[in-house]
Amino acid sequence: MYKNIIFDFGGVMVEFNPRDYLMERFCNASTEEKVYRLTFGSEAWSQLDAGLISRFEGNQIMLDEARQAGCLFEVQEVLDDWIQILRIRRRMTELVRRLKNHGYCVYYLSNMPEDALAVLTRQGLTGLFDGGVASCEVHINKPDPRIYQALLDKYHLKADECVFIDDTRLNVQTAFQLGMNGIQMKDSVGTLVRSLATCNINLR
Image (cartoon, rainbow, N blue to C red):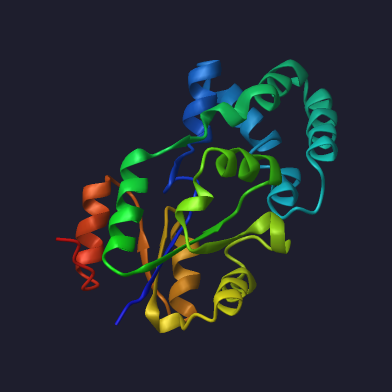
């Protein structure tokens, strides 16, 4: 029944947990929450994901707001090195290869700013896939249904032949609404493989 497996990047193919990163850096819940709201959780970051502003523009907006909030130094630190927390999960790349070896087509669908996508592309992640759509390329973020439709249209995919994997429940719910099957990745790769098996995707 299913022919296509669609993967999110951050939190699925790639380690990306900004709250853990901020807590480890600042060791203070109040500071972590304030810096999160000024960076990863900000409207500017959402616009970066959608490719609506440049990294320079986005950083200037976040730094201006941080200055007003009295934590310019902390936000500058994060903007200088946050991209280092993006680490490709090798076991996930192995899973993608196994799926391809079993005849499935694999795609990505991710909210991703241009600079982060460029880093992952240089590291070879995008080359694993048969194709994909990043939010910065189409100027739409998940869970907007239009970004899912952009992927379906680009590769002439049928929704009911797709399984979508994401770490965010709302993103998975949108996939269901469009006629795909969806899996929220919460745990290990082994758990994901068992979830795939419930969709009759057996990799043995």
